[in-house]
Image 1 (tube, rainbow, N blue to C red):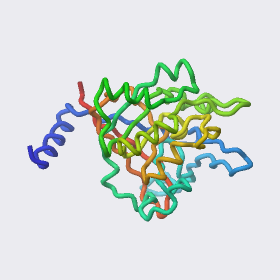
Image 2: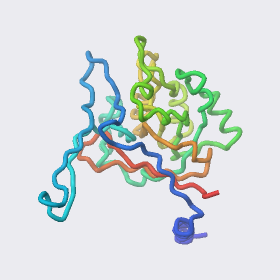
Image 3: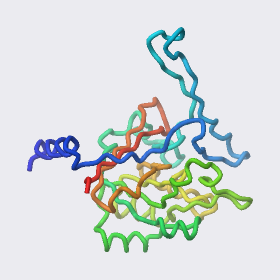
Length: 264
């Protein structure tokens, strides 16, 4: 089958419903949960604001549109290498310079929903990933690796989504060794999470602080956060579309992440 045949088959599948589009993005608005930073480090991202410019009638009269105020890393979003100091020097490290070939790729979905339900501080290890590969097949170069925790069930309640107490936030994520394995040995395209960021809640205290950010962007690779509906994706076989806005010198961007999956 040629590439043209493959695209034709995909187009037909989208038209006849044998390929389904899964929305992997959370709603983006004033109630979207946002990351809280230690006040001694930086200011928090301001709450998302949506302001009306016109709305038919006297303020139109034929159109409706709004202007927005939001941070680059709000809601379901894409982290580019320039988001972190380890990736700051890549000439193609901002969202407007990333090769768009990398916005569409196969996805590996590692189901950790049971473990995350039992322990909000659950950490995915290399042993977990290798066991998953033994069952489902190897993670290939240039593919996304997504950690399914079903944490998106909390994304309409900021307190539950952030799950922070006096000791800090408690959300699942990867160990540094997992990210190193995916970057060095598997040559993965990037890493995605259903939590507020790509790292575990406790990652600031790891030996390599915030390893998903630190190591992903050091390798000139990409992160996705606040993904939704990963329960609807197979372990293998989905195609993920994750395209950021082309913000000049942007370190990240809200996205409408979409997955193409077999309808059955």
